[in-house]
Amino acid sequence: MEFFSAALDSRAGAAMRALMAELEHEQARTFKGFIVERVLEPATLQILHRGEVRGDVRPGAATKLAAEVVPAMLLYRAKLCDGQLEPDFGAAMVDEVLLPMVRPVHLG
Image (cartoon, rainbow, N blue to C red):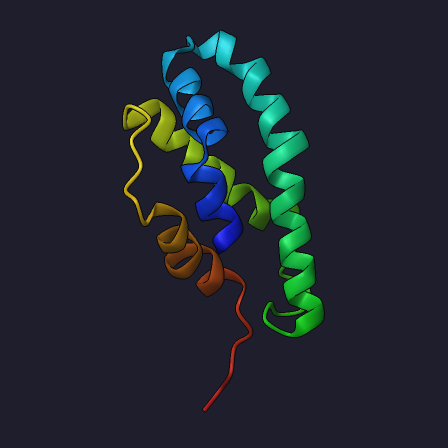
């Protein structure tokens, strides 16, 4: 959780959000491909795999699709919300979306 919050709140994160908000759709495609495929998605997938080893992520849930959720939300916010993120966006994204999606299911 701290990783995402720190990345989003960093100067580089703010610059990335501002740049994505300003790019036209076609221009954004190349930049998005680089950021998502080489930075965000691998980092998210690595975090999910570590959680799987610890037992915090259910077996098999550390997938490419699950790893795409966080970058997809960042790009959505960059393009459709003028690049604005609430101060707790990173924590909320992890707690309210990512963890419920990959957390082990404990039946009563």
